[in-house]
Amino acid sequence: MKKNINIIEAIRKINPTAEVSVSGDDINTITWENGTTPIPIADIEAQFPIIELDNAMADLRYKRNNLLKETDFHGMSDRTMSSDMTTYRQELRDLTNGITTVEQANAVVFPTKP
Image (tube, rainbow, N blue to C red; front, side, top):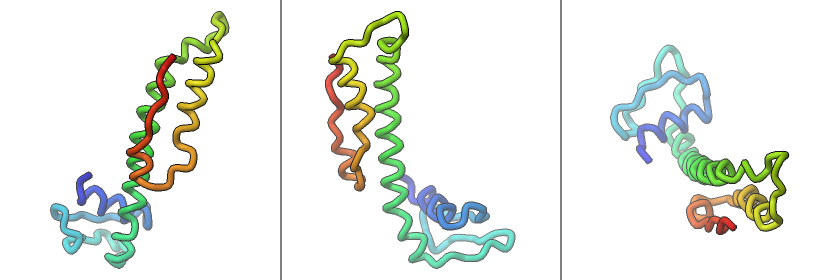
């Protein structure tokens, strides 16, 4: 993950309307534009782990959602979904339950498609 994106994302988590620019990935080069009130660097840095978890969860949900899409046709009204497929799809939906760290998100093992 690129630091300059994290810096701007972190600022926007605190102030969604902030107008800023950053040179490279150096947090000390933040330029506060158009009267945006500066945010202390420590407050910005405190947002980094939250953003990292948000991004890891977004990646996990993207993969999970694609696996669900691959099996959506099993749920059409003219088909009967097997109990194995129902279980598989429920396990996919439940994958994100209880995940609170990037490490947990990255360690998820997807269920095997029946």
